[in-house]
Length: 135
Ligand SMILES: [Zn+2]
Image 1 (spheres, rainbow, N blue to C red):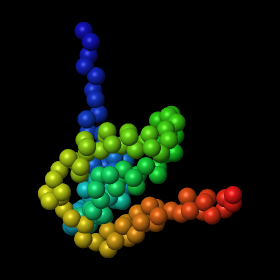
Image 2 (cartoon, protein in one colour):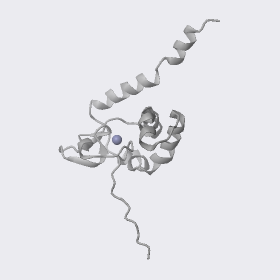
Image 3 (cartoon, protein in one colour):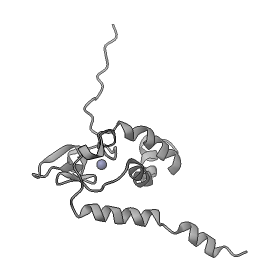
């Protein structure tokens, strides 16, 4: 008889950004205890560090495509990786729960996160290219 394979149901991934969780990077609850569902980058002191939409989080995390390629042995472009994340994220708790039922970001980290996001989205690579190319 074939034995049913044990699947690691309890393998933990951050339910916000999808990164594998280890004890060192667990988020923290308001009382300072460890939160088993989210990483410390997403969740700190009982609240999310930023009020991201799922698409914003996909955009943000797609910068780690090289890490993903190294781990998975694939050669995805950043856009291809975003497609992977678009399939994956709706399964995570944060993105499958109505926003109003989630604890909202209240810490100063939230603003810091948003500022970092702005820097990334306004990265002036195309402008620079245009200004250096003379016809
Ligand atoms: Zn996370």
